[in-house]
Amino acid sequence: PDLSGYEKFGLGNVKYNISRIRVTAVEFPSASISLIPGTGIKLVIGNASLTIDMNWNIKTWMFKDSGRSTVYISKVFVTAIFSTPLDNTGHTSISLTSCRTTSGDIDIKLNGKS
View (cartoon, rainbow, N blue to C red):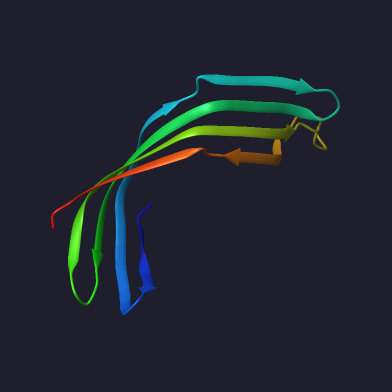
């Protein structure tokens, strides 16, 4: 989905729009799944990275600009716990009970027209 809105900065408002958001690369160099007896499943992802491309434009009372952007997020670590209880019919269901995510580095490259 596109993102748009207004933010107040200094002397005025900035109108922004971010569109055509696409995840272009995902890497999981370290991932593991293990069973937790009596609880469910633990998923651990280590040192992951992803690249996101998008279009952007901003407009203020003084200037406007637009362009493309690439965001590279690295050193991403995720730990998620899923419970796997049986429902009333005896089928296993799955639900996320906890999730912790950290990211180490974010690199943003803006290519504008100004």
